Length: 350
Image (cartoon, rainbow, N blue to C red; front, side, top):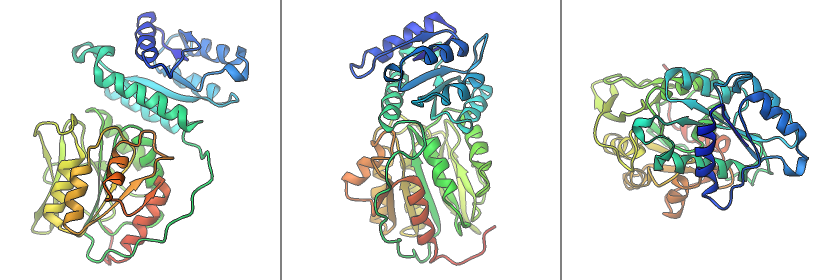
């Protein structure tokens, strides 16, 4: 179901989605009230698996409609669409907290608009990925047997994590699994436009597990904190007199992304050697693969998200197929492994 007050946007989005033979649009509506009414009228067997919901609409906006849509059975996956602004980013993160599975940022005309190939690929991946997984981020299947805990990683200095499509929900699940303080800094690259990363940092900080903020250039990295790469800036680390220091870089995009995972992981391998634990979560493409190779070659350890819990098993799949991952697990399971690995790192958390 497409829900947007602009007939032009609805038509353009329909063209994007129906270009894929695996997607069928069952309804096009102009506001949240029409979306709720349409869903109520449909026989359960014909209701949409996914609702693509604009947040800013007259009559009934997306945030008002969201809980009404989610109470229907069968429960649809709701992906919200928000403007590429700080206000739009804040609304998207609020929608995730309210039960939306994911978001797509609406591109501006300067970037090619709805015809931008990157936007089209992102929309298709998210719609198909979430439809495959079922009703949003709720558990859908029995958890596979847990592997043995990782042995403690002595001398661990940092943890690096990379993710893309489906990443905000996976990150939230991972962070919620960190039931004990981390004795080292956690550095995260999520493919996300400028403006959205500040809102994502706030979203993760509200979970209450550890302090979360965008990384600042020249900042000394402290144990027990999560540092998120800023939109449109690479995040790398270097050694300093007192430990690790964050650096933000305007270097060209890698793997069509800035921030990208590979620059962070390469810098961790160069600065910390084998005293690094790397994680790759859901995402398209293979950003992070080269960086994981560098970390593994330096003696560090790599973990990746499993296919069943990934919206898109591109990035973690590439690492798994290369034989670099010690374990493939859902986000909560990865958090358990990280805590086990940190058992070998003594020291106070700042």
